[in-house]
Image (cartoon, rainbow, N blue to C red):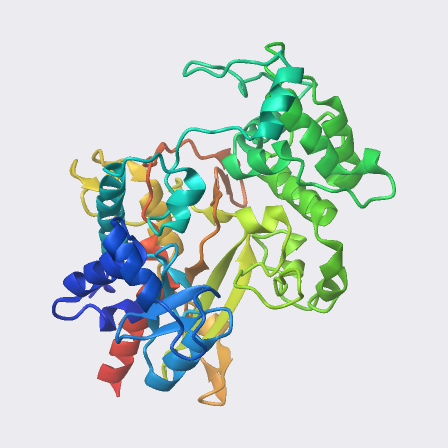
Length: 484
């Protein structure tokens, strides 16, 4: 019996008879207001039922007719009192789960939201006036990307700076080679990946980094900012990253020297240094209070900074890494480890941060797993399977499968108050914006060390729903009830 394919397990309680029609009606009337009539209705109806305010991030309950402020927690009070766990953001259309304490993704709901938003855009297109990006958002039909219209100040700057580069469809700005400084191909491939990560690119090219180090010349984030400017300057000659290499040697001494290094190890070391250098100074003292958290062998010392993420006012925010720097916001996720006692079925749960997931590959001396369903040539999770081919989904399925720890690794169960055999399972509690997967290409044994050359196929789009912790929560709850 396999777990149900679902995202947030609390959505199933909403998906009853006619739920699609009800959700569409909410989007049409209160979220994506395409016509003047629906906008008037939204303006008159959408006020907080507790304080009467129009703003403060209004949310609507999905179970009953109730509007409440998200900022002042009025919608939270309603959810707690009525046990209505789902609400919709009336400005952006996101679904919030009060049990998960986060905005959730559901494929069916997302499809309905997009369809209704497109309808609203079409209705808006029939209006005689041109609608700007700002007006498009304020009129209640969500953000629609349109052509850039410069302000008077920007026009003035453009006139005084006539020498500009023209961006075309076949433009090569951003594509630039790197000189190999001995055996630094491991560094170059990671630099190319980082410089073409859209969120990092936007962060550095918009001058968001404010260096607080006493010596900016030793700041790796400042050097990365310079590197992004070099990459997107339009120059075609290869760049020589000698200053970046020197800073990496300075801050990660185990990578110093001209020997060939591991690209994965360089990525983790670079992210660790970038995190330390660009971290908001306002939370440095908070970092020290959590240094007792466990560090797993396949993760870096960055796990020591698994902190409560704070906003500008020091309040807790929803982020598994609990840090406000750009590196953690993009790359850090939450990994959930569930250890289940085989006697009383009690579950001990630990959630740790991760920057990457290390995945096993089939080797000559390591038994692997059956291939994914559809290995006969069909398509599963966006992957076109060829018979005998290992896929990224196969690796993730092995990573998240339950593992019997055996009699030699008994744990002391808090329910049985004695040492018992158990099973352990890893799942994703929180996905990062950019997920990094590390394929274990080297096989170690008592007599040999060899590289695994197994071909691994991966899709352009990867559905991570089957590997999320929320997918298994409802499944194990049902299994426990059956056991009882």
